[in-house]
Image (cartoon, rainbow, N blue to C red; front, side, top):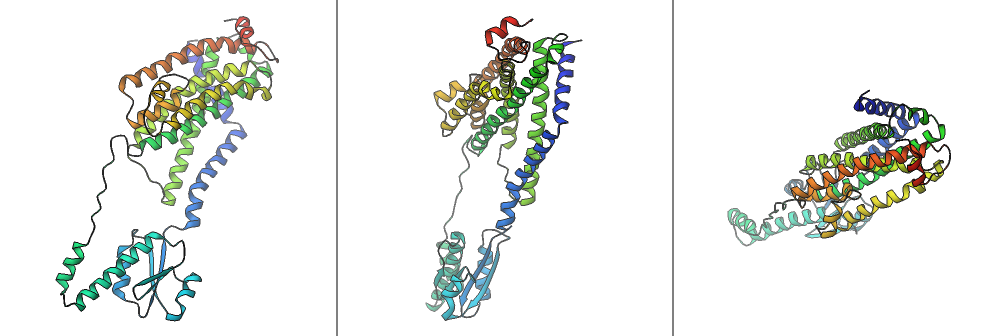
Length: 389
């Protein structure tokens, strides 16, 4: 059989074997429920829109109510203006019957009141008092409107600088997710290899296919399943965010998405190969975590390098983004920020591909030698020399 067909058959087997397990299906459903709950529940508890209850002493002025409603920063803000008796102002505020009271130009409210509400009502009441004072001074409506316009403050929001449109923050969050995904799905590879070694069935398989073909197929199958799970979780989060009305898509998110997918594929291929080789050297699930610790530490170094460099590019981050063990969680941040040059991106990807190919060849032999040692712990040199190819 051709090499690609062999790898494809192995990948298909590993994909469906794990997909069909109740553990995978239940864990996926639980993760989706948790993600949706984390988005929807806070929205449901807090309410879909803010609500203001403004009390006034004396009669409710329809113009005042209309002005407050028009000045509310959100269109769906519920504003209610009610009458409060002079002697019951403080008690109404303390009992929560009203959020604040307008008492002849004075605002009375409880500690911790919404600052947006306070600023809005204060501005509206101030405008009304100014208009009353202007009218008392003999100014006509046109002159009063001109004076009010002269006191208006114009706010100018600057356009974000290149690379500073939220993409850096999104890419940093993505680097955290990449770190977690590579470690999580790498553990699948690790435990799967240990289980195969304990069953001894893999020894028969190695008699018909090359070890690096078996390793490549396993990585491709489990990697595809992991990518599918990530996509489903992402769709769940998007649907929940849309329902709750909290989905805020930053500009440039599409570019960050393809950067994340690119480096998930590259990073997972590299580390999954190493996780598989590490798993072939141990004989028990209990020992698997110790075997994976050095690989997890390498990823953590890259993660901390990205975390400490989030405020700006620096030589340490530049070097780490080129080195295969650290590039999956450092280069995405530089690419999203626009600080990585074209030659650095090409070089980093090329080094990652070459390193993964070499690792597959080398780890494939260690993988085969370790599996052939049966149910005992194996040293790297022993696995290398005992491999049949």
